Length: 416
Ligand code: COA
Image 1 (cartoon, rainbow, N blue to C red):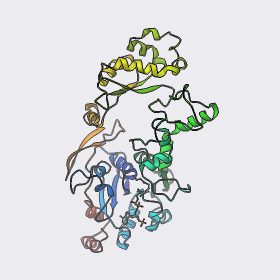
Image 2: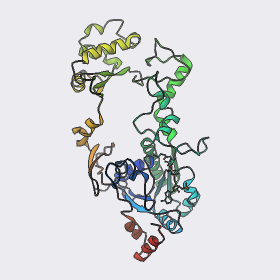
Image 3: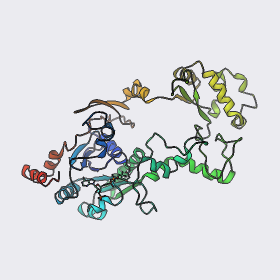
Image 4: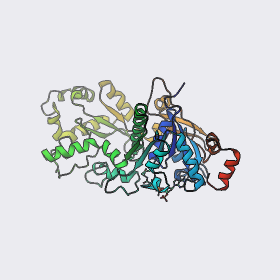
């Protein structure tokens, strides 16, 4: 089967997580992704948090599948010569270096578009161009703090809290992938490439849209009716941390199930969807609540919502999280068990859909990774192993027209 992005050549000048997540996605969909890495060391994640001595770490293998690896010292003249050739023959260059690094290397946007006017240059930075922090280097949690996620996550009596989800890294990579695909579509119409820039702060903020909604509601009303602070607690002039409250108009909470005393994940998330109130009452064996004026509307329930959650917890006390969800799903109640990573790794449905997939690696044996979360009717993205450092150097150089003697010369100069 021809993959949609087959024929699109990508220079993958990325490292750590944000950039690699983007190019990995494009590689799954068929793009020819050549990862350019410093000779001798490569992407720093190859050696970070290793679980097997001298073998590429999972951090690297799980973010760099389906790619080729070309080692190239792009600070040496010989390395620049190779990169120049690559730029002339490629469609997209993706990078997430610290601010100004590509310019310092001698490959500014102006230089690149002169070499190849069709080139799309896609960058991740911590902050957007012109931002008063645009000189800062940024990692995941820095972005979560700068993008509004940390100040609104956690409990009101605790500090700002970061999420385990890579809102700053992989999320920014996904935004960049959308930008690249848009620029490719644009190029089909204009014949011209363009710069695509995504900042980690902006990408986090894009996912915190409802918190900016809440700031404006708070400014106007002085309270937020769906937050646990309402109606008994205090509001200041900033959006508070809401614990496990639902972010929209549907109150919800994480509730204890059988075994919570010893199992840190024996919980479900329970949502009280307004129009599902009657089924909820029937599921809980509380049919009298359906018409009771203290319970019948969201407004009536909110002042004693935690008493309602307590009652639901009593109902859950003799049910495992899986048993509870199996009952509640029959009543059309939006809920889920809190799944541990171990449960997710062994989930038969996730395995069957390819969202959790096993990959064979030359040196590490088989490992688990997250496959494409995007499903297509005519494409089944297949995840192949990440490359060893420099595994495809000779192959890529030969495809650029270098002879064996040329390759030897580049090796002599320690450029590859
Ligand atoms: N050959 C020669 N030099 C290379 C090279 C290669 N193949 N690849 C990278 N380099 C050089 C760069 O040119 C740069 O040199 P310079 O600073 O002397 O000009 C140098 O390596 C370091 O690059 P940098 O990206 O600044 O690395 P760092 O380890 O100091 O910082 C980050 C890491 C992630 C903090 C930084 O890259 C960053 O802020 N990136 C943007 C935001 C981002 O993506 N962060 C999240 C990552 S998940």
